[in-house]
Amino acid sequence: MAAIPKPAPFHLVGGHPALDLVNTLDNRFRSDGPTELLPDYEAVLRFMEQSGLLGGPEVRALSRNIGETDTERVSNCARELRETAASVLYAAAACTAAPSADLQRLTQYFHNARQHQELVWTPSEQGSKFAWDWGASQSEGDLPVWILSLQTASLLTSDAMSRLRTCGTETCRWLFLDTSKNHTRRWCDMKICGNRMKARRFQARRM
Image (cartoon, rainbow, N blue to C red; front, side, top):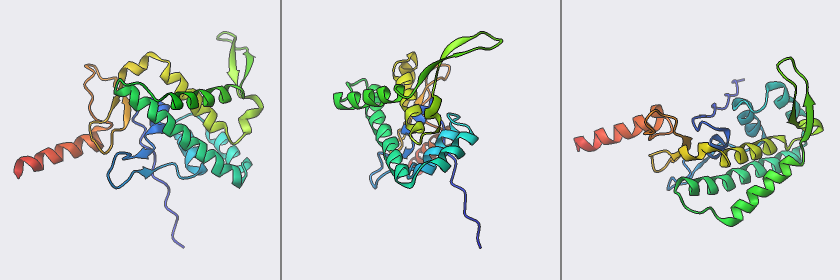
């Protein structure tokens, strides 16, 4: 029996998990349609682990505990959160006002996530402090959506938004934070879109 090929890893080039989440709808502006990289709950968990938002043991526990009906519901929520965030972030990148309905929907996601956290005291040798913890919610199947909601809220309210850019390839337009020295980064990934555009320009000059 032939081995089942492993799914391709996600290209995490956004510089922030919220941007990498939006980028999981690949080529969203392509004329023949985008490519869905989060088709199911398993893909959502792979994204969470690869992004460092959840560890391997946590991912495996969630995979075991969640029911089949909930996997579809949570996957749909993750994609809805992604598209709502995309609407707001692309508007911000274009310096235009975000749709109020999408801002309200994101606010609902943020509030729902916070309701599942609890404030705890964490003593340590480096210095004890209060921190937000998921507590009993750590084992609930919706955890990825809650984490991604708060990641999105954190980005939207941070100074990093001033560095928000879109890839220069029209069919791609992946989001990323431009942390280059002169703030002149044009591509999501030079090895992918940068080289692709260089090849197109070279071919155009030869025609």
